[in-house]
Amino acid sequence: QVQLVESGGGVVQAGGSLRLSCAASVRSFSAYTMGWFRQAPGKEREFVVAISTHGINTYYSDSVKGRFTISRDNAKATVTMQLNGLQPDATAVYYCAARAPPCGGARAQYDYNYWGQGTQVTVSS
Image 1: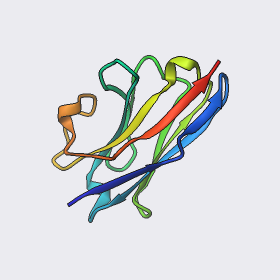
Image 2: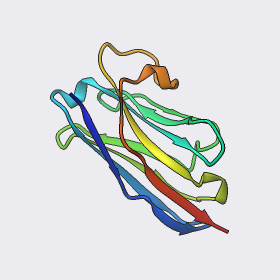
Image 3: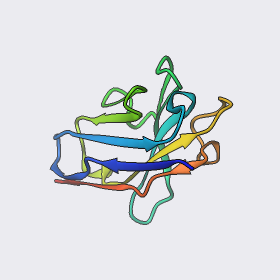
Image 4: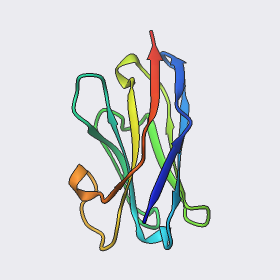
């Protein structure tokens, strides 16, 4: 059983920054590909970023590339996403997701086996 708990969401003004964290309760965290998705009001959940098991490879959606950064600490079983230059269109619930081994795709929802409950990010104009 894998449990994922997100934190760090909140309200920020346009141009501001937030740091989201996801704490995983799982054995062998380093074996899991980790990702972040988001779902804005009235829209489908979409891929944001992902990171490979040991952090060597990262994957970004075009909409956040250069502004968001993902990292992981396998010793602490956490994955973090730094969100810079936030704009109102970033307002969404952000979900942490984990993909059990073996490694494979990282951009699709169906690539992931476990999901957190989400954390709200609201960007005011």
